[in-house]
Length: 320
Image 1: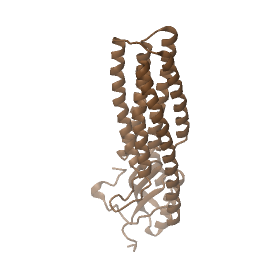
Image 2 (image 1 turned 60 degrees about the vertical axis):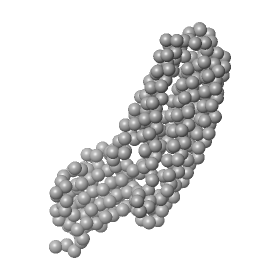
Image 3 (image 1 turned 90 degrees about the horizontal axis):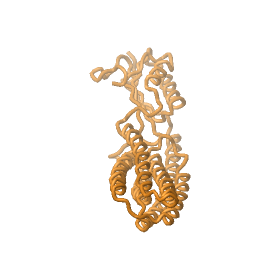
Image 4 (image 1 turned 90 degrees about the vertical axis):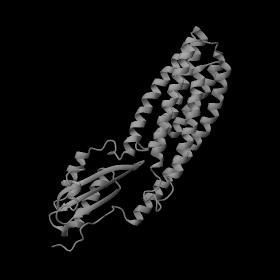
């Protein structure tokens, strides 16, 4: 009988490495916070200009973009708060810290887009049934200014990590603003040169449909993370097979769980059965190296079962 304890928990990074990882995460979160704060300020100023211009000119496209930017200004502010909260360290009540706040913010932002699309659709139908005068000159000037500002804001948010749901949600809102500004410019040109008043609400509806598709994608993505789903792009079966074959000391791997806590923060827990418990250190090193280098999983907890699985009542096969 081996003298090893019934289970071992191993984390792949040393204290110094964990400190460096935390420092990098803090620096990244701080950079995100500055980007979001700048985007919030620019979006708020442009939103005020478009709302005033829309009311003055009578343009639904400008009002739609202004209303969208008002929601986006709030969304960017929420995203900024989420990024700041993500910097808070773990405590006795939240052992993982507050990193998941940014995913929750992304989920709420996606839902807010559905509300906005409903309002735009209602208003567009009313404008189609009861068209009114539109001052196309003022509408065009304000729309061009809004377009330029949205391009600037989107560039400032560009380059975020694929896993960064917070910045992804913020970028989605700004992209919707950009599309709204393009629609407003086109509507202003059509109304000015062709006199087609219906172009204003129709283009507003087109933008609403585009926003709806992106909002649905963001909603699914953030909900998947909140439900502890396997990170996007990761093949669970491939991961399990790789773990079973990573070292000859490993007899089998089960109770495998992989999820994402927040932006780029992938985690895994698993049980490993060994042919010889004396090879535990060797197996742990091989598992940690594989998960870090091939699958980008930085936080790993491994339980070594010295003989049979200790949790058979919970089912030892697969990830169930």
